[in-house]
Image (cartoon, rainbow, N blue to C red):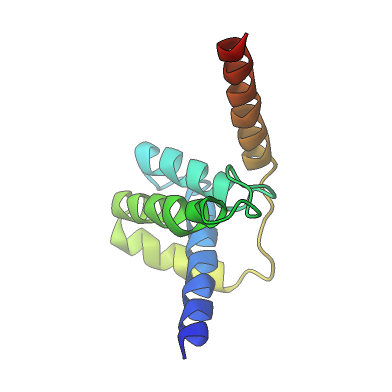
Length: 122
């Protein structure tokens, strides 16, 4: 019962991430919503996480907090009629995208953290 609910929640997160990925490219989406949607989609579809999943507790924290919070904000900024259009477009897509931009953002953040740690320790 709990596992089925978690699977359903994960499927909805994937669908919603695809919707914001489409929103980031849609010409009718307001600029602020487009920017938030692009960042959220880039992170959600990045092949690596900011906090790797193998780190106990913290590794899943980004998946449980950062992505849903970003999706919530993006959906608050996208007009409701446009959300329905994007939802229909997402339902027709066969595969989910992979974000190379998200990959580069996460790698850049890790590199910056390593540089700051090295400077602080030196």
